[in-house]
Length: 379
Image (tube, rainbow, N blue to C red; front, side):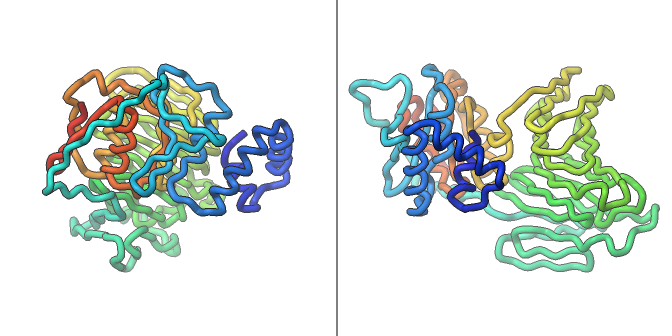
């Protein structure tokens, strides 16, 4: 059962069908009922940081004992592992676990948590810094420091006068964007997106993800006289009819990942090969080869970044380091290259400091770290 149904039960927002699913699961076993009561207790206490979804993963899936497992609550300088009244530290467990090594942090270290910030580049080349807590307005758009909102298409541009803006999110940043057609876009760190200020009538609505990662909640074509929504990115083109999906296309990665949440999209690679995605599927397009694949994925792990979470499932430390380096704007290097391949399962809140996350990873006794200025060394 999807953990979100448990949360919706606590919030009293279940649909009739979801209520039936929950009741069936709840009545199946005492373990399920005990687990729900524990989630309910922790939810009512509003304890921040408890990884309830990962705990759910423990009882709903078999855990591979060869992988490193992280489930945590981090508070008062302590790590608490909550799992049906017991705790899970690492597999394999040691009878006499050693304490983690003391890490070294330079006094001049100033690593900030990522925040809402972006650079808006207008058609004439003017650049405007958008920052959390600061208001910005022009004749087409306004920003409250967290989102940039364009006026709805009240007047359509002539075919020869489509004005393009570019939104650039630096490392250590994120921002939300609402396009003139009502499409919502969550834009991740180290990302650049180009789009029209308004969309032309009876033409496809087209935007370009120049690089980086963005989540799209597309305004359906039925609201725009059947106009399709198209996203261009290096090596592929995505045709959308009205849906929610995530694209990851970073400059330092050779694969473009498109994950479909709901609706349908048609993905074209640079060789004009076409694949249609169903919800829960992800396409992988290789920029350097003809490789073009589609597979089933855990959608939650692919899109949790937009909800303020890092979700890792069987994720190598090398991949985790990439994600953390973008959000905290740091450089992470591995002194021991073998450490790059250690895999973890876990969820972190994005509002944790880098030190808190590294401490949790270090407490596995699998890796140690040190910080000098904005460089983190893993060994």
